[in-house]
Structures are given as structure tokens and as C-alpha cells.
Image (cartoon, rainbow, N blue to C red; front, side, top):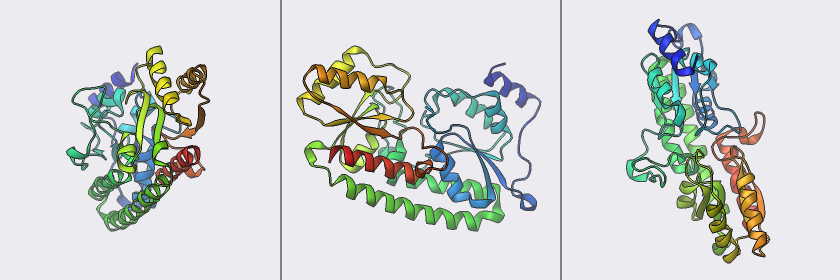
Length: 303
């Protein structure tokens, strides 16, 4: 039985729901999609929440398909938080149906529409990779505070306090990124990655951004794409490109080989966290840690 069919069946018999959230000191059961949202909810919720993240380190949310266990985690939660903007592309129908039974919240809902970049691949859709502009990610805090406070009114004061603390951390992260990226010579501020996940980063921190694939990783890059990008890199003597933790590195290695054929020794500058954070127990497990790790990798390779 597929995940969608299972979800429809469970909804039909009324299964799911975590009971009265926060009652008698119980933790609020939260299910999240991406690692960035998992960290966001943990930062705001503190000890009052029990968070189940569906997508772990190195997982590509564009291609992710929900398992039967995921469906049970969605329906068994007191509340579900997701990114939206079609990031969780293949889970869209499941998240929509989950909302009929379980409270759900799109964390990006308060981002002003004029701040969203439009997708170059899908007409009428926004680029979902908003977390790479720390100022935009700061707007995701309030929806989490508000929804948790609605589900668990007794914890509202704590959610508000931790939310404000987290917003200050994000402000510090933004200043850190601005300062470090400004140390890269202007003619080297070109960020080339496997797929086009860093447009918000480039706009906010002053870098030209190019991706071999588009915003989604569903479409494979063709030989023409590789040749065109290799020509640009060799002609402009860009020193390094980057692989991503959630995207196979073979396409970037193909660009590197094409540059060598043109007499340009292109380096792979390191691995960036794009659609998922790092392994549990590492600094990059958190949003702050993955962002700082990316800034460090970029500046060390290009500076």
C-alpha cells in the first residue's frame, strides 16, 4: 500500500492525532519535514516539545517520498511544520491531506511575497530555498511560536522567550555572513554548485550564483549544460566549485573534467549543506551550524 493510500485509509477511520497537547505536563508531539525546520522547532519549543524529523542529514526534499512510518508520524502528531513553496514536492498531497486531521503550519507563510525569488524552472512558483538568507529565515520563528502557543497555551511564555532568543542568534549569523563574504575579492565572489539552491544567499550576501541543475534536482543536467558552465568557469578563471551534501557529486565532477580539457585547473572547494543539515552530534546539525560551515567553506575556497 502506498503512503497516500495509507493516509486516506487512516483518515477514513479517524486514526491519528496526539490527544490534548501539553496536557498534564506531556510533551507536544511535533512532526517536521526538513532538518532546518526540525532545528527551528527544537530551538523554540525547548523541553516542551518532542520533535520527529522526517528528513535526515543528506536527504533531498525535492525527491523525498513519504514512507508508511512517515504517514503515521504525521497523523500521530499534535502539529506538523513544513517549509512549503513546493520544497517538499512529492509530499505535497500527503501534507494537504494531513491537514484535514492534524494541525499543520507552513513556516514560510510570513515571508513578504515581494521578497521571494521566482523559480526559473516552474512558472508562477517561488524558489523555496529561503533559509540561505538569514533575514528571511528569521521570519519563520513567529509562525512556530504562534502555532505552538495555540496548541499548548501553558507553554506560550516560554515559546515567546525562546523565539526572541533564536531571532537574536539569527541576527548574529547574518552579520557573521556579511563580514566573512566581504573578505572575498569581488571578482571571485562567484558561487557555483550542483543545483540552484543559493540564489537567496547570493542576493543577500553579494555573490553571483550559478547552479548546474535548476532549483529542483528532479531534472538531470545535460552535456550542453556542463559544457556551457565549464566555458564560463575557464573563461573567468573561477578557482573553485562546490558539491552539496544532499546531491550526487558526479555532475560537478563532470564540470571539473570539462574545465581541465580547456586547460583550467578547477578545484572542488568543499561540500556545502544545501537542502539538509549535517549529521547528528556535529555543529552542522543545527541551522546556525550548517550556515556557518557553508560560509567558512566558501570563503576559504574563494578568498
